[in-house]
Image (cartoon, rainbow, N blue to C red; front, side, top):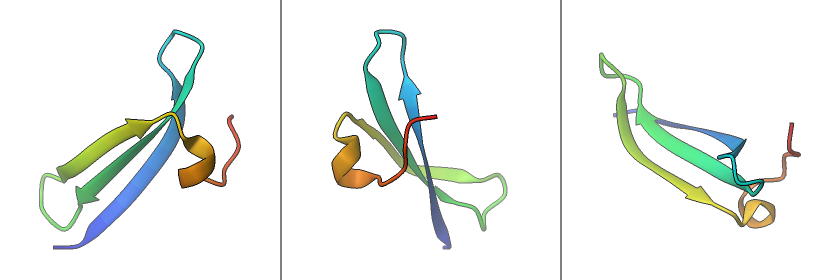
Length: 51
């Protein structure tokens, strides 16, 4: 199984920005989500900027 991850910063409508991370197995058809999570601790887990 080949695992890849993707992440994005999102505002779910309450004005607070969260980091959403998703781990997928993309060597299976269809692609399978292994895990996903969101955190408000963006500075700890991501060096990217919002927008």
